[in-house]
Image (cartoon, rainbow, N blue to C red; front, side):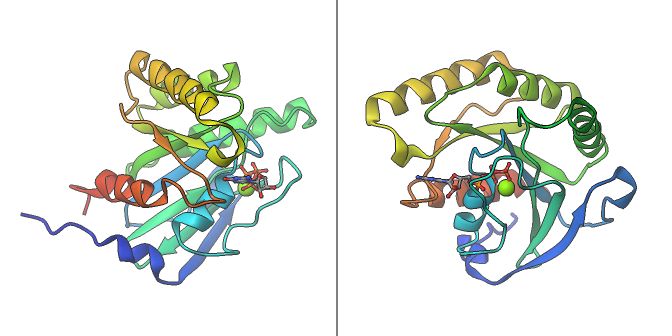
Length: 207
Ligand code: GTP
Ligand code: MG
């Protein structure tokens, strides 16, 4: 039987491996990886920082569209986590949006070590039509993924249940979606331990 990873791996210092803006630059890496995907400003970088107990690893910004490249981080020489640029940034020119979608699809299709993608959903908005398109892309790329509600601290429990319910209903309809929806807040650290366990679960059988 394989030993289960200790969630303490997330508490060790994390190192930046590469920032990638074109498909030719995808780093050749052998460790399994998980990716964090979601609309601009949904809280990807913040959640990654909370996951790895790091105040300032992935840059966070109140200006949507801040992260423009796929950023790869090494966690304890056990896995890589990938911070993916946000989609749905209304002010981005069309050709930039297309370029980004192509890059993301190339990544998703050509990455056998990608164990699971975590698709982040803002508690205030629930699953949006743009999120739906992203889920369809993941289904097309045959990447298994799990939905994660972010910014739980920004809404009351009733709204949170609404967002979770919508996310669960979306996941239930999707072939490559993992059933459990996680509820998190990078601010209060709610759900971060459960997210760590979900990452470890994604890696089981991959090492
Ligand atoms: P892009 O890289 O632009 O796609 O954004 P992102 O998804 O990485 O979002 P980021 O982590 O930069 O967060 C966007 C804003 O939301 C920042 O002002 C964060 O401080 C804030 N934020 C992120 N997570 C939370 C959370 O759990 N609670 C609250 N209250 N604010 C959050
Ligand atoms: Mg970011």
